[in-house]
Image 1 (cartoon, rainbow over the protein chains, first blue to last red):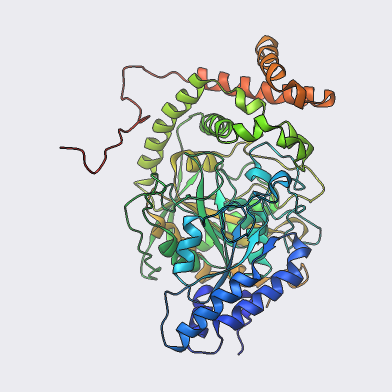
Image 2 (cartoon, chains in turn yellow, brown):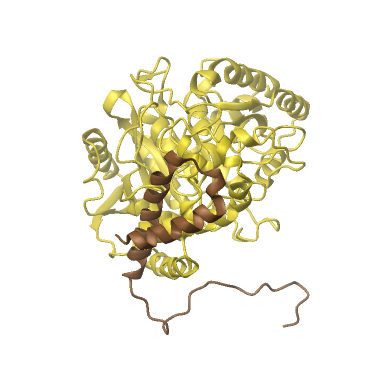
Length: 471
Length: 68
């Protein structure tokens, strides 16, 4: 076998399973070993679900021997962000020290769906405590330690709050991982770890069994090696769930990219003006590369309070979602000093301001839809900087005053977005480019991202010793 | 920046959660409250008509058994 298993895509691994070059049990054993031995280097793993993975893989192996395959995910190991409930005595910690022994007697819907599709749960992956809702300022904010990206000449942050999901995929510890995003928590780890992350349209994927930070902003999505894998996964993950009434009854069918299709992309004027040099030059180079598959036009967006409205909704809903936790005093046991009292100020958002933000949301969503009706996607750098050093503070979109029009507009409107790696910047750390599309049109952004990855090799570079080299 | 608004919110927090807060954390909490005041001001300065399109704040739940 010549293919390096560690960094093989879902599509490649599925092919190997069907051609009997590798078995589900071999794959589970292989990735469990990597999670166990390499995972601690990046603080990526909370709980290794070894017994469960081997039990599931044994069943899947017997099915494969009979020529029965549940889906393209049959026998593929994965990791789940530790805010997804798991039964069977597997803790679900939400990254928070006071909840390190929290148990549920049911599986999150997404865990059930992936099991039914034949994916094997190999690990619960690390995350920022309480998904970062209390305004953490540095990567230390998790009882499992700071998430570390496998890239770079310095020890740098994997991004958050899906920190373990990002570093585990980037280091080849699992072929894919499940993360969640309220505002940036899938795209930022994808950026910092040099992998591909998809934030689906709000309501595409059930959140039943997931920790709530904000009922109207939280989304669950995949982190993978390629856009193609994200498309395959979204088809498996999405669907109506009576246990989550926000889920849509619209079916998602992944339509792989056709090379004869030409896209139309909008880029907001001056969108990269606040980015550091390496991010800006990689973005410009990526735009040049995209011109082979797309027409790119500069656009203006209306002057609306994107960030203020999104932050207000997030704070108000978080204040309600975590009210019991705040009242209990358990926050005193959180890891980051600022998280021990960070829940108080956001709880002071007035009801009239929350309602005003919801009214503004309608306006923003309408404007975004109008703009995106003319384009397949809007494009921007995923983050204005490379990953922060683990020991330093970083700029938070949720906490701070930083401008993030794409992130705020996309999350408040429930728009899908995908981040793919587009080069390396300062300290040999990865940079990313994001494509944001119209609601329910993930196929357009997946297609552009796939087209970009067909013309570049950034997604095929792996971090053996922290240096950007191709395996 | 309205110090009165910050102090007012701080009083509410102190009343309710004072026992959870250490002295060295008070200024940081007040900085967070300054952020809440900024959010409020940013939203207030954005004017909306109250007779335009009603926002989609609530959708009635329709059970399967409900008559047409």
